[in-house]
Amino acid sequence: MNIAVIGSGGREHALYWKLSQSPHADDIYVLPGNGGIEKSVDIDVHDFEGIEKFCREKNIELVVVGPENPLAAGITDYFNGKGIKIFGPDKAGATLEGSKVFAKEFMQKYGVATAGYHTISSPEHAQEVVSRYNGCCVLKYDGLAAGKGVYVCNSIEEARNAVADIYSVYGDNASFIIEELLVGDEISIIGITDGSSIKLLSPSQDHKQLLDNDEGPNTGGMGAFTPVPFADEKLLATIDEKIVSPTLQGIQAEKFSFIGVVYFGIMITSDGPKLLEYNVRFGDPETEVLLPALKSDLLQLFLSCFDNTLSLQKLQFNTNYFVDVVLTAGGYPNKYSRGDKISGTGLVTDGTLVFHAGTSLQDGSVVTNGGRVLNIVSAGATLDEAIRKVYDECVKVEFKDCFFRKDIGRRVQHIK
Ligand code: AMP
Ligand code: GLY
Image (cartoon, rainbow, N blue to C red; front, side, top):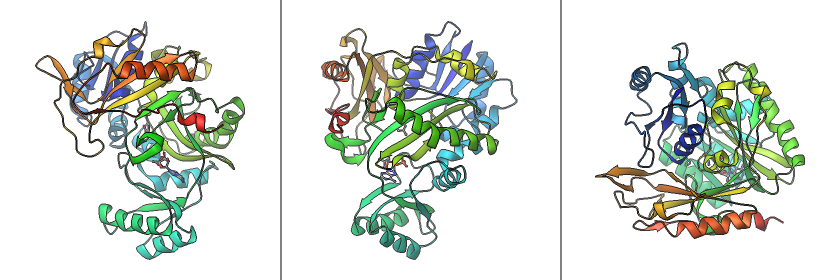
């Protein structure tokens, strides 16, 4: 079967790598892809007609959508009924990620454990809610904001500044929510669903902030690891009962056409797990560790969603720990340079994976072309071993002003 993966990041490179291992896969193309993916085809993720034309030319039977934007723009609705399978929810289902207000209303309607919140109707209302929380609250812009648009506040002053900022960035009519500040450890639970059952991959943790010890500005993700030692069976059973199962009931009740991924961003609080957010696609950089950790055939899993056999699939996992360190261009998440030559990727030890993200090919050389440039992924029998290995590999890769966090996977050890 020929396949098209939509997107251009490390997540899509990992999907390409994993799908390539399936005996059922023939040619796999990535649109638009990047400098590390051989079969990259320069078609924009929003050019649905161009994607369809390409699929017809190459006899593609399955389209796997990586990022949220084409899902929110209705790529699945566009392809439905056209004889090409598409892995990703319809526009209505994608609203779980595309609108924070919609997602919170959905959580409340179906009894999903989450933080208390208010939908804000005016600047005065925002100030009143901020005072009620004594400044310990989180402001979330309603629409897709590429990892921005969330303000975590610990004081009245911070919260007032956040209110001012949200109106100045998103306009006087900005739609946003303010929710209770939760304290605890975060995990990402990512599942593949056919809309009636769901198969969860192993629990993982992302590191969203730029600097060690979770300091500095938020980014698209500086690294990830799996599995998460504290996510034991008891905790996972509670997450299933309080978050995953009610979500699936909601998806069915709302009649979304939902073949794809549900990503649950969860905070483990002293009062149990609470859902922070839904995404309707694989996490990035979580996917870069989750797919190496998955032993099962990913293509078979995807295809089982289309013939109602997902519930019969038994997922198998590697027993190793996997750690991903993201190498970024200096300056990211603000201004950074592009077009810098990358060397050393051929020097990494066998068994370590290099998933490209912000790279492109220029005159036969791979150069930087984005903020998050490469993902280096190593495995180990223990988390410590995987961490040691990955950092031995990271230093082999070079490009101008390369920057990466030195503490990926270490946060978990502060917990116990
Ligand atoms: P979100 O896009 O909703 O996942 O928010 C981005 C990040 O903000 C999360 O990964 C958390 O680190 C943080 N965050 C979101 N909501 C809360 C909350 N209610 N309490 C504390 N931190 C939060
Ligand atoms: N790793 C967070 C995300 O993919 O949104």
